[in-house]
Image (cartoon, rainbow, N blue to C red; front, side, top):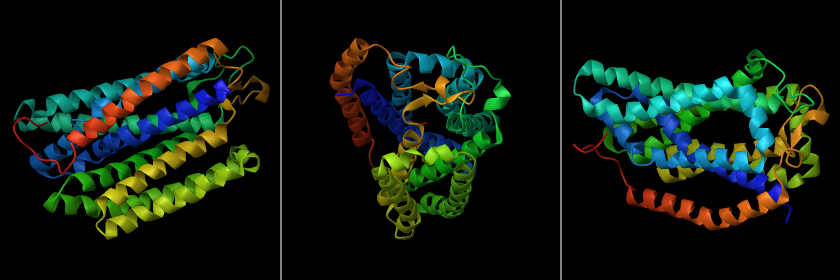
Length: 338
């Protein structure tokens, strides 16, 4: 087995798990201020309260796997994206604090302050994560020494910001569909009314981002000639996107959520196809790009880590399944809730 290829796919699985699971957490936070009154906002918080911290395990695992399997890519990425990554970390911290502190006091100003913090932390975190993905797709100025050789302004370029805004729209839609799945009654119908404009905004940004990518980054589609099966991801992505409004119209929240999750999974897969075999594409010289071979740890390290994955991954999957099974069904608000 090609261990480098195995770890590239493993990182893709971990990133997909994080994007799908913590994606709806960030989406719920982005939509938080649309909820009316204390009851609706507590329902929103309670919909993700039991699961958000477990969802972040996928991000921690992704970071640890990237560090161990491709340390040079990890080092180069952090040397260039250090400030954005610290801002993401701050956003995740503030989101957690807002969740835990918001309902500890009944004062209106207290809850309004944490409501605003929860929204801002969620939306900015989604924006920064998407911007980082856009910068990686466009390419990063990495030199012959495998070190970042540019400025922050080169990373926060118009294309990267477009992908960032697209990511906010994507996760807001995903969060809206999740809320539609977890709520009931009047609030569920109000959430349903949000999904229609969210679908339109996401659709417009999806088409715009796709067109701009095809025009400005033609190498993003180079691997489709080498791997024709990748077109299956494109077809599945389009079908999943189209099924979200269909399922909402037919009052099938679980099908809508499955389609939204599939959309995110396909987009992560297409990101991987566009990058392969590069981990980081250098804009200074293609020869300076960090690939899954040039940026990898030793074969022995990758082999030992593979054994750890085979042992540990079932526990992660089992934990995730148990948590979602225990907290299945419609969300309620009680004195022990958020």
